[in-house]
Length: 103
Image (cartoon, rainbow, N blue to C red; front, side, top):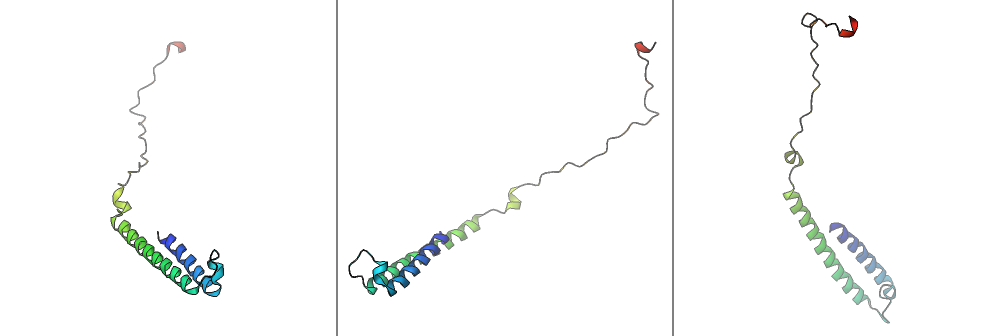
């Protein structure tokens, strides 16, 4: 909402500046626009902009307050470690039996 408020603020400032220089450009649909009307419209848009900006900041603070820390939300995943496979010793290995094909 803060971004939208800034966009409306920029448009309001542009409307005000153009309207003060050439009121006919800002209020092209009127026959005789006045600077008084331009300043009134700009003041109303400015109040809308500040209200939106304030509410956007308030929402951001509420969201930040209720946001849970990411480290507490996830438990660390155990990483498997490489363990060497034990090799049987030569003395414990049983002698090979002869197969029937070698007789």
